[in-house]
Length: 284
Image (cartoon, rainbow, N blue to C red; front, side):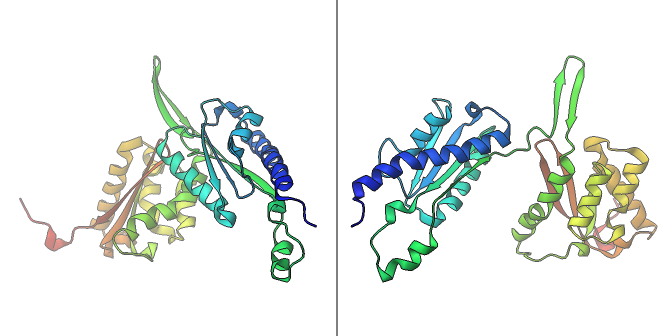
């Protein structure tokens, strides 16, 4: 005889938040900030059946701020984790400074039933588990400027080159796919890249599999003048222009190009550019 549904519901209502607490504490420890800094809590489970729901119990167990914004996702099954992360992404992108704790906790006890050939595979396949992830935009602090009494205080983290490397390909795809170009060959373009530093240029070249000379103009400007912040892109354009005039650049036969610049946030500024042909240029 199977345990009564009431007994099983009582067990999962108590234990689902507890195992989620264990996973969440590990995530918070790795994160390195106080639990009270969490602004939003998203809890996904098909196992809990009560109100107040598991997300309120978890918030209490963790000592989250009383005003933390809570969302419960019920009966999403295997898609619950994906939906919770998608929701966390949307919250993070639209709420400056938001830090979202995503908690996922499931117990199959609620689904247990006596031996039944039609359910053997399900009972053998599924198990209990809990996980937690803290989601945030995460890049606000790595590159920034602040006006202070002694001037503009500039901060640049060693994470910047990797963050740009990890996001540059998708940023470019977003631009090109919006105009129906779904599979661009990056070597078919000339490149006007803000030379933030050698590591960033090296990472872009490697990530996009650019031919070695594609970033020569940017490297030349970096070597001769350094990073002049917003003005640097004009120097790169001017360097390319002179190379085209002297026919010293492999890019000179290419009509279309890409401009990239990087700023606080991190922000990746992108633009598709067209090199003017001789027939386009009219004397004033």
